[in-house]
Structure formats: C-alpha cells, structure tokens
Length: 209
Image 1 (tube, rainbow, N blue to C red):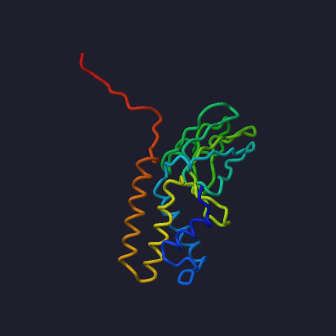
Image 2: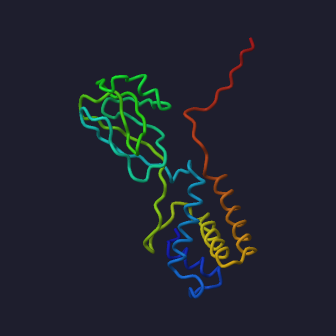
Image 3: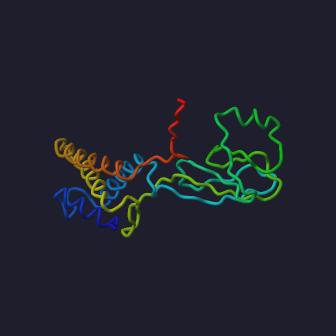
C-alpha cells in the first residue's frame, strides 16, 4: 500500500521537481489530499466507505450523536429489541406519526437531524442501535498514512495532484494532460468498485397466462 509520503515523492518526481524547489512538500500535502478527496467524493458506494457504529440512547432520551465522519446513513438496527428501524421520510412525517412528541415505547422509526440519530417513540429503557453508514475518508496527515483507495488506482491521486500544481503554475496544457489521466483512472475505479447495492434483485414478473 502506498503511503502519504510516497505519494508526495512520486508527485514531485512527475512534476520534475524531486527536490521541492518549485512546489514545497507542504503544498504537495494539500494537493494530494485535494485529489484524494475529489476521488473519494465521486465513489460514495465504494466498499471502503462503509462502516458501522453502535449508538446507545438512554431511557426518555430522543437522540444520540453520529460518528464525526458520517456522510450518509444507510440502515439502522434496533439491536436491543431485535428489529430493523424504519426511516422517517421528508420533514413532516415525524410530526404526523408522533404529533405529541412525547410518545413512548420500543423505538421503531428514526430520522437523521443535526448529525444525530433521532428515534421514535421515546425509548423506555436504554436502547442500543447499530448504524450502518457511508463515511468520508479522513485526510492523510502522517507520512505513514495510506489512502482507502486500492493501490492499483492510487496513480489517479498523484495525477490529480500534479494537475493542480501545473494549473497553479500557469501551465494549462500540462494540467489538462494530467486531468485527463486522473479522469481515466476515476472511470476505471468507478467501473470496478462502485456498484450501488439494492435490498434485493429485481424480479421479472410475467402476467401472461
């Protein structure tokens, strides 16, 4: 697996500035993380973006905070009572279903609000919830940090970083060449890794007798 330090070294080499005379190592850190963020944002369903966490909500309490790197919640399981939670749709359903906002019982519904998990009705006992979610990979900081993207496609991070450096340096033709290279790598990665998941396969229904 390629490290943050190795990615910066390779980017400087491809920029023909291995001793960081034109672009400092600090700037390469920003370029690499920007290119990395661009690639991960375009791959929301990638398996390395999936994670789960347990949130415990006490009796009579409505909500619990989500992990800091949550991008989108995909499923919630009431692990204490043993059944899946049903998401509340839109903004008004929660008030239509629970008009008093004081109803109590086994939590059956949830909604995401203000980066917290809200459950309905109010739990009467301390309840644990397993939350599955898509996360945003954290920026690399230490030299030994590694990107979540498989090593086969990490050249796309370098190409994107070099493209930014060339664009900031005023060399638009070279920037365009590296942008094209990154785009080809992203397309390959999307094709190979980003497969949206369905709850079940579509069924072919034949109504002819």
